[in-house]
Length: 246
Image: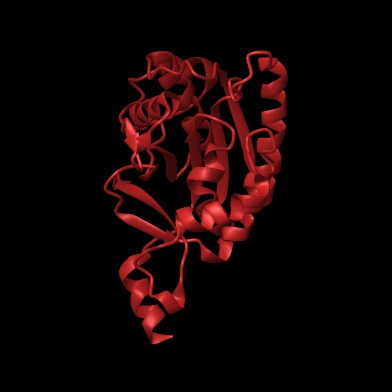
């Protein structure tokens, strides 16, 4: 036990819980990027809200696919997955999949959600072109950039989008901290070993997206295994860049 306690003290530092808003591009992004952490947070009493910027209407390589039908399927899959992880609410902003741009329209939409939800912590995606030695989807990059621009300075200042105050009664709200998933140079490692089965179960709800579902658990364990954990105490982790705004 002393060995694990020492390892935990060095590696696992997750700040106190509060209201958490997860802003990502597509259905299934939350489960892939931070599903274990979301399960851990909700088990600890946090209220988590998902905000998906698209409905995932391009989530197929088959040109004969009906985008609207696929989007409806993916919305349902996302709600089912979120329920497994204890997520309180799932919002869709209905921007078109594959065309996200970190422009003022998207920024305003995210500011609106931040002012509605009033989160302490916002989780979004990294903005690098390369992620884990592979290409990062342009929608992921755009989602991260637009969310960061919405958080600072726009959501916390009445000088930005004053019509949200005037017309919708949405007062400015300052976010306390940001977690970037799939980002380089992570500075926060969260042990999700206990919650890995829930993450896998939630991912399996995305039936339209998961190929070879019988191998998913094996893939997740390989992907999430912490190489720094002692062999006799194998752990599974999710990593983030944490930015404090206080």
